[in-house]
Amino acid sequence: MGKIKMLSPFKHGKEIWLGLDTPGFRRKVFRLVDKELVNSEHIVAGLTIFEPGESSSWHNHDASEEVDIIVKGSGTLIDGDERVPFKAGDWMFIPTGVFHQHVNNGDEPLWLIWLYTPPGELPKT
Image (cartoon, rainbow, N blue to C red; front, side, top):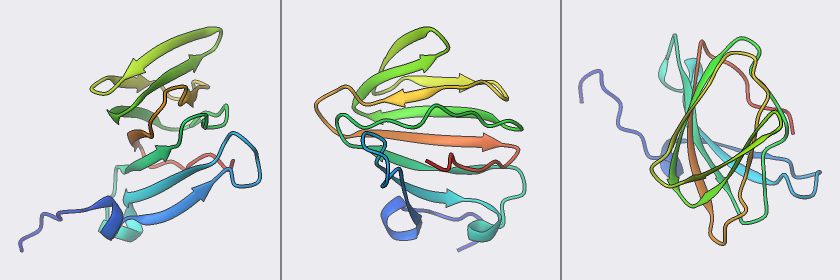
């Protein structure tokens, strides 16, 4: 194949568990795009799967803009004092440094594709 890389989250992704020590924050991340995996210079991207009742921590990416695309499931985005519902097919743009939290309050797994630019790190929890 040429220079384009075809990627499958479950085959090519770097598996990362987050929140294992914090009840309610357990989720599995499949990082697919970064410098180490595909020699990306400007983007970090992947898929996070949240089981029902799970959420991300309250976090920000202090040097990166973020785009999230909901592939499957539904939930709530917490943005300051606002709670914004989302569903499959929705996109989110999160400006640099803005604190936020994704919550799966649905009854099926939530699949969220995320992209950061410039490359940033996942939350620690």
